[in-house]
Image (cartoon, rainbow over all chains, first blue to last red; front, side):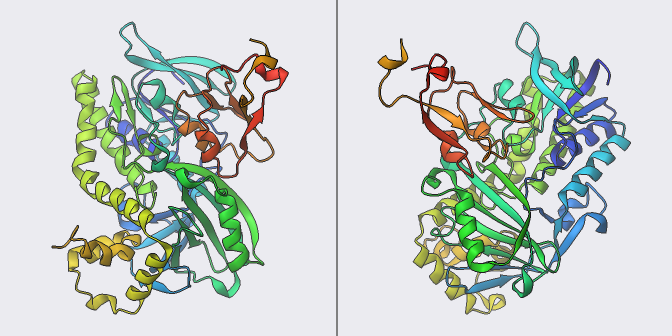
Length: 398
Length: 79
């Protein structure tokens, strides 16, 4: 580790590793730190990614693929379901290997990577501008200077907070998540189908998923709205589901966590600091899927960082270009998904069940929704449930 | 102020280490940034905690809870 870098990236998840690698490829000196002892563990993720959208960041490799998904099934409480093909091949990955490989790529691009290294605080100059990171690396304290610090330290990002970014939205913009890695799912699992289960009585303001990781093994998880999490815990809701559907399964792993679903922070940069991935709330505001979006955000941030350092000006004004790129690409789409989540939250379980039932009886290909709309629904399977209601209220098609 | 003079509703946020997964969900929603995820445990700064209870609602396993003030922590808690 040197005493000074162009860029320090805090957090070696997919977003951090991609940001670090893209900065190094742009000719910058980069330090990537990870507080955990090992990259990729423990996993806090349902592990679904889009194959095509991932390809620019890593060669698709069977060594980190646990399952290849051919369709999504959206279930109601009665067990009826709608089958949807994904718009692009979906993969269920082994995040331990996937994250490790992304960090490895960063290292090979010239990034200094070090684990068991935690940021303790930011170093600021007299004007309050961030000029480095105070950290504990392998037990020893260091002060390392940097022109830009990239916060990739997850939804509980300390770096973004220390930099003064507003990262604490209302509780209604958080999912509480819990997941089991289960084996022994017997004949109940379809190894090429991702299941979503809707219904506020089983997952209030959220949903349950079953993402296969092989013939007999799956991530079985839940998110519930943090604002309605007072009656029972996410774990208790998931236990009820698992007792009903998989009473004889074994648990090989447990994951807990919170996911911000604001659809990105209003401000993701300040003088000398840029936030990416969960630290910038870049997860999908409906499904909370965040790996692909985080990697795209990281790449956008890195491009702007490289340009800023080359031109010698990395003030907030210059770094804002990253926010503009993000908003240009995602703001409209994410606003719609955010509103859609709010609409589903307001729907009764009977209404949700009825919609799934109606759609399940239709030949999807012949539905009069238009190709564009279908493509959007395929990309965000939960939206299909809302299709009829959205059209009825004239929000999408008039 | 002595602890016996404190209002009846006074409480502090307690962490059940047996339940906690150190997932950081509570850290993210804490407005005054009073919860710290350290290497092997979760720490609540009772002095800056405003007892808004967001962390308690956020915990996926209810490892955080309202606990009655004890003499050990009462001097730390801001009322």
